Image 1 (cartoon, rainbow, N blue to C red):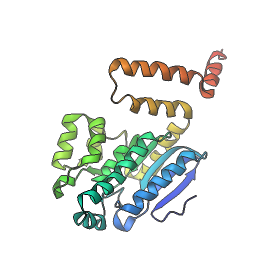
Image 2: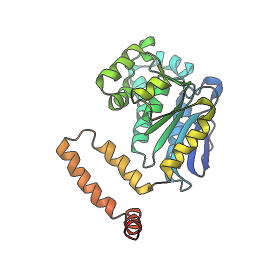
Image 3: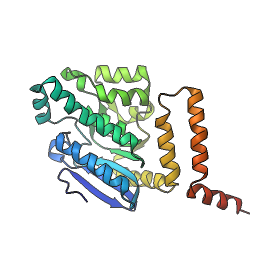
Length: 255
């Protein structure tokens, strides 16, 4: 296991919990925590102790976006340095999308700017009722550029533009209503509901979930016909997996 300073890596009962661990900075994103999260995700990918990854934050908030030191740095950087810096967060989002295991964001408190993007980059999101989401970049003159690729896919053009261009704050209830999150949990039951949600995903076939995630995202830019063709190919592959073969045998053996 890597030596993490700003991430907690905790495998438990089929689930690998990754926790952003900068509570004094509201788990703000800087170079180190982004780098450690990439490493932790890569480690979790190969860790046989867990089928599902749950990403949360320590302290009062999930993630407050870029930290002040990072903002100061980019304000003084050249265009090429800023491109390289922005590419690090883009690489994290791409890694999350390409990861074979499903990732559940467990959001409490605030998820702001890149923090909202980080939550939405996960495959599934569960939030406490008091949680809040906001793409605040426009309020500082930034463009929520990398997270736009995710928000547009999650919400569609009209809803994504409203959130990205106004920086409005979404309550957890509103986020659930518009499909920004999957599950809403009462604050007092949040940890219990997170564990239940993770267990629900972890108990089904790991190979089926892996192939489902792959196909869902792989068909992004395909035509309807191409997506169907890709589905045919992956369907045939799924039939050959051990999980599917065993599942068919169990089904056929039922009285």
